[in-house]
Amino acid sequence: MNKQVYLDHAATTPVDKKVLREMMPYFSDRYGNASSLHFFGQEASQAVEKARMQVAKYFNANLNEIIFTSGATESNNLAIKGVLRACYQKPPGGFLSHRVASKGASKPHIITTTFEHHCVLNTIKELEKENLIETTFINPKKDGVINVEDIKNAIKSNTILISVMYVNNEIGTVQPIAEIGKIIHETRNTKHETKSNGYPIFHTDATQAVAYFDCDVEKLGVDLLSMSAHKIYGPKGVGVLYIKKGLNIAKIQDGGAQEFGMRAGTINTSGIVGLGSAISMINDQRTTNNEKIKKLRDYLIAKILKEIPDSRLNGSKIKRSPNNVNVNFSRVEGESLLMMLSSEGVFASTGSACSSGSLSPSHVLLSLGLKPEETHGSLRLTLGKNTTKKEIDYVVKVIKRSVEKLRKVSGSVLKDYYKSMKHEA
Ligand code: PMP
Image 1 (cartoon, helix red, strand yellow):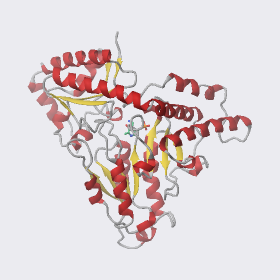
Image 2 (cartoon, rainbow, N blue to C red):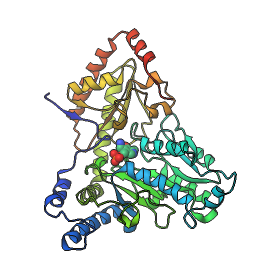
Image 3 (cartoon, protein in one colour):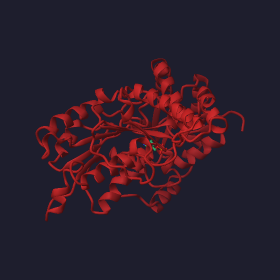
Image 4 (tube, protein in one colour):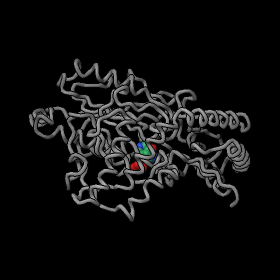
């Protein structure tokens, strides 16, 4: 393979060379356990605390509100299960303990959206299956943006948690988090049974937003925020959960007392150093990178829509992450297109990397109201800070050629293919 163009930055990003340099000493030289009291341990602990400062600064949070985890999947699990667990515990943690104990009391209610990442959706669906919660799933509008009023109308007196992602990982649409935050704060003092007790709690999965959007937790009005280092040029296997001070949340993992007792397990020093380094680089580069990437994104969208007939952009063009292009090509099967592109050195995705390998239609595209057969010719191209115009030109040439080839496949073959496909409800 000659040329290689990576346009799958929403799946993961390369570790920045500077980030890697800062991480390196913590593997084989300064390898102490950050919980050890001796010099080696304290050296590691200082590096972790420096990273905590870098992260806290980025989110405008306090140091003890930053909990390091193994990534956004864990952060989201901790946020959702931790809030629920606290509810079932004795006061002051759990306002629902008295109701749950009493006969006929309603279960805690959680609101989320239909197009969250599977680590949020499946966590909530599992809790529902276990009969521990009631749920409401809100659909986005056709443009992939959640209507704030829909959230407001779904809030009930037993709503404990509202979880809405900041930027969707497949179509890149940006959700009105600050507006939702405002409504939740107003509701707290009126509609909710506990009045000033801090419910409903507001969580956002900001994994795809951190590199591009303001994540000041005060401005957003969030109580919990999840992120992952490998989406921001940091290493895989490390993330953060921001937990607002005083929030009713319980740990979900038992073990040591690391991370203020909220997350047991030996601290991933090198990973955390990498996360801190990566997040402080965004601080310096966000505006310049955003402008550059957005310009290239718009160039890519315009070129595809102009040069490839029967192509369409999925999701709002305006309320969209600077790095995301998600296009649909009618009469094309997305997985075949992906493989063809890969054979020519173009690396993209049909949906989130975690779901690829399954031929079920994307739950995100279905949530926009698309029919299953309309979802299958969709391609996600996500740009990075080093993507060039020359690469974009090459990619469009390859996509155009591949789409033309695939469309030559007879309509009946496609029809049979769709018929035989298992569709997710
Ligand atoms: N949430 C979103 C929006 C994501 O895009 C991802 C990664 N695809 C995750 C959560 C999971 O992140 P991690 O890989 O760190 O577990």
